[in-house]
Amino acid sequence: MDAATITSWMREINVVVRAERDHLVQLDAAIGDGDHGTNMVRGFEAVDLAIKGAVEADGGAPPGKLLILAGRTLVSTVGGASGPLWGSALRSGGRVLGDQPNFGGGQLVEVLAAALASVKDLGTASVGDKTMVDALEPAVETLRARLAEGVALDRALEDAASAAETGMRATIPIQARKGRASYLGERSVGHQDPGATSTALIVRALQKAVGQGS
Amino acid sequence: MAVETRNMRKFLNDPSQVVKESLAGLAAAHSDLVRYDAAAQIIVRKDAPKRGKVALISGGGSGHEPLHGGFVGMGMLDAAAPGEVFTSPVPAQMLAATKAVDGGAGVVHIVKNYTGDVLNFKLAAEDAADEGIKVTSVVIDDDVAVQDSLYTAGRRGVGATVLAEKIAGAAAESGGDLTTVTDAVKRVNDRARSFGVALSSCVPPASGKVIFELPEGEIELGIGIHGEPGRRRAALGTASEVVDVMVEAVVSDLKAKRGSKVLVFVNGMGGTPLLELYLVYGEVDKKLRKAGLEPVRNLVGSYITSLEMAGASLTVLELDEELIKLWDAPVHTPALRWGV
Image (cartoon, rainbow over all chains, first blue to last red; front, side, top):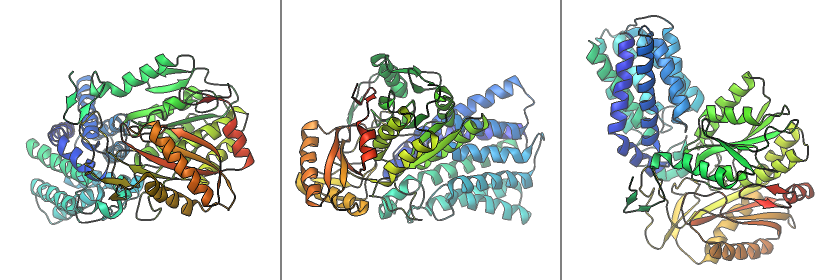
């Protein structure tokens, strides 16, 4: 994997959040304030543009630098909670790769683990709080475990994306303990968390991007 | 662009430009008091930075007007950083605001307790500190509808924000240092409690859809300021019955000493006329006196809103002589003006 993998991951995210925008807005309107879809579209549109610009200006930008650029762009365009959370996540992930031009499956796990750690640190959330962590943590753990078992990267990413989707659906019956949905108390039960939903989309986009490259 | 849906008729040119165009209009209407820095998307007091004065900034999602841009001016905020509708601003806005108003005596960030606001302000404060500006932050969390526990993001910041901006703004205008002004914000937050009720939902311009449907005869109790549903739904009673719920929620949590002087803030959510807000004030005033409190100052009107939501919130602030003095001090902003 290389810079092109990151470029196509970000492009895939842009495509999918745009396609799912109304769904994300609907989920957020039920237990938040209905802006999650709009915010994610605004952010990843800007990321796509920024990365295109960086690739044109400097065809040799390494993958880690592209992730850091994506993170910075999210912090500076999204606002809300998802801007700083995804922004810090991608920046932390990018730092893992430094200036190296290529990376393998093992390092991809470390990138995602660093992203997860920064989300948990900044948002002080754990699995079961009904947040994006409920989708991201199982994805990272699944990817790590499957690669350790010797499963091929494509297959392992497929399982990681499924694990994120399972985690996303598992947010439905639980009561939110973090973020705006927590203000609703018991009324947050029965609704799928919008942040976990967009996170599952982002992991699925990664699986597609890596699949295209191979 | 035609902007009409089944649920919405709004004055818009382009829904994605609503915040920018509104800020430009605010600055055009009040060019004697504020200027709009369009590139940074901030509203700045015309005469900022004031050398030696502690500066106050606040910010948050738009859709709560006049909060915060309408409170920029003499005796209140030095700058406001408005985000998209119901979305916290980005750190670069708060950093630009902080730099635009720093007069060397430090800058106080007044932050409403929402995860997004807290995170973005935190990043901005770190950047400002890196640039050598002294910044303190106070998080406002006065909404008694939310339990402050490990199981929530904590209480929301609502009506007390307006009172804190006025009172701390007066403290800064009268020459208070960074600690004094920061403490003024904290004192207001410590001694104020709020509770809100919605009679309707509201329609964010970007989606054009109501956030929730409220069946006929029902209201939402314990709402915040983002059109979100409240803690529970109840049957719409008389004004007196609804106010009973609001007063009970606020008074039982505030636990003010009997005989305390209080400031009563009856706030409209955007779609409730003053006719009804004064009716509510009358009920609140009676019930507070019955509960042994003495309303000596008040603010009645729509100051921290949720777009066109119908409804009201009640904030009660326990006063002392110094807070009364700071409240009475002159203020000259687009939305609050007295003593000048």
